[in-house]
Image (tube, each protein chain N blue to C red):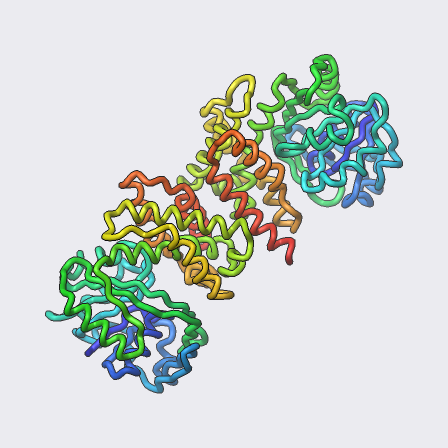
Length: 307
Length: 307
């Protein structure tokens, strides 16, 4: 299968590397690490075993890749305005597009551009960071759950999942993409938000009673908003507890939004905060803490941008 | 009148200077600026005109001041645990104690220690900061409103107010100390809290729609909690609007809590946040934003302290 990775950050490089190692024909759109990757290849440091790809197919422009069977979108959502330009050259008659981006609204954006029938959505629970140019550190987890955006093509979904699984990516399928998107937000909203705001890793928040309880309150606001969205099955409040315990096991982990702020990048507040807030508001769900967190993040982001 | 200033920060030094200039016998308990003040006196840079006191009566210990007619307490509330030790040597049979500290609970603490009949409370709307050792910058405002804590000694209150006014301190009296304390919180909670959390001055918050609206939401939570406390007259919601406009006129102002954090001091979260939250909770008032802000401040304060 010919695959293009658009957005070769910690997520795109990690999954792309597994797919290439598993025998797929993977093409990476690169930016920051182009020189290092083309010269020395890609190194993955992983709790599941380190490995190295001495040679990868890297590009500066998607025009040089041409049409593919599958586009894997791992771009930061604040760059979604350039998806049209980046993805268009990759799309042929039979091209499928899988977005593993954060937050809400990404399938919609891609569907508007390339047609809803192509779009598969997914969420990744992956702890990985970029290291030196050409290096990715996989710290743990990595399960992907994928679902159809609009069509009901179970076969396509199962085929894609089995390719992933054969390549060592733990991939499940779901009939309720909306639910898994919201489940991911139960984690993303409190941890990405508070860690980025306070510039503290997840363990700092979880080890103090006050912030641990604030994390839980934020999770419960997400769950209430989610359960007003006509999911097939509601998210139970116990899910918050299980996410707290899951995160306890992550140790000193720095969420992506904290890294974004640290490195002076924009933060993904629109997709992770504002879209969910809109969906909640439409159903009359009060989300005062999430609203406040979004406002605070935008305020520090504004400062970053002004700098 | 023999007056002792306990807590000679920007507030204590400023009002103490006005009282001394007005002919009162003022004694300052000093710490940080002792050497500079004893050597070169006190300089006030004020929008109402600069002035200088070449010589002040400064002390390292209140034992050396002895009993006074009036103790003016301007100490940071996180140091209230040493009030007993600091104030005891100043208290004689006829000593009155006026606290102009921030937040709630200060009159109660002093009343427990020295008897409720001595205690007068007050709030100061004062924009002032310390500059170089021995210098205070008065940036604007300065009105003090004072009220009896428990007794109904109108005469005592009026006498004290007229002394202040004769010395150039704009001083009003009130029959509802509780109300003016809560009114001050309508300003203190959003501005001290958000400026300290984000490390941005008030104008940064007010010039962005999102944070301006968050400031207003926080004010409305304070007003709702206040109006559940049996005030003589409720605080109207328009008070929030008037405080926003008042603050627009302050320009680039850095509230005391932001300065505290910047200089690595503890922040006054107990008096300004936790006490009001307790009073609100007792009356069943939801204050999710204030609770969240308090938790965030304690978390950054914890970091400061751990450093």
